[in-house]
Image 1: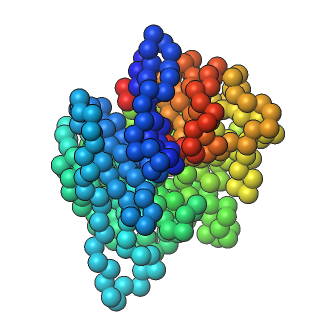
Image 2: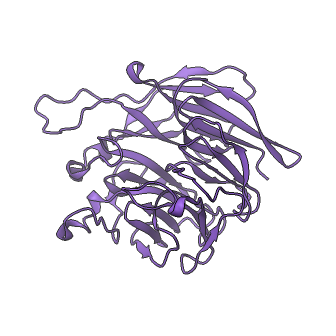
Length: 363
């Protein structure tokens, strides 16, 4: 059973702990500062936090195992933009949007996805970072565009547990990309997705897709789930082909998705009405869950607010622990819920948090 979790918010990083089966807020860090992402490194117990300090820029901090204090470390830095570049994107770090570890055979390796769409790698626990130029320089990047932000961003980084050199990333809006050689080369991996916000003759182009979030099943790595801007997609061949999941109850629009760590057919979603109305259907919060690869869904409401509820769950606002049954969900309205039984019942942890950007389990 998971025993610790972290909540990254607009006004700090908050720590949850489970004692005798009961979860409660235990500590806080960077109080008052926006924390855009948190990463517990289960390989060695290190904790990382990315801050977005506006005028002072993006910052990255590391807390070593057993330490009480944090150390500021390096942040991704873009190279100088060539004077003759036709790129309309400013080559400057706006935000660290995603953080993931390398494989268990890669101690110290970290990956960072950023706005404006750069992927960075560190081999020394975040002290230094290198832009993955092979992805930054793909010709198709000229088609990438901003979704919720003005510039493209990498929000999903899925390292294959079978091979640490195999990494799949999700870009809003730039589709999905796969490397099988540690980032030396990349191929598009969004075939089958459909961007209905584009003209019909461009809707199936892979480089303009907006996968809000992509997650991989650790025990069945070829099984991936995508909460897309235009629906829910699933792949059973490591992203070679994506199939749309239809007949989804309530709505297929949303941002968050979590997949069971050992059962690639089981996944959870936090639906909203639509892009232009980002609230729960009928102002009643629900989580949808499939256990059969999207053929059928259950609607989970027990313990969630069912009247006058207008919460939105961000891309990283829904997580499942390694036990496959403990779920954590938090919203932009500052509400936090936890389920110990796969979503069948939700317990309110807090109704007074700052807007939540990300939640992560440590175990």
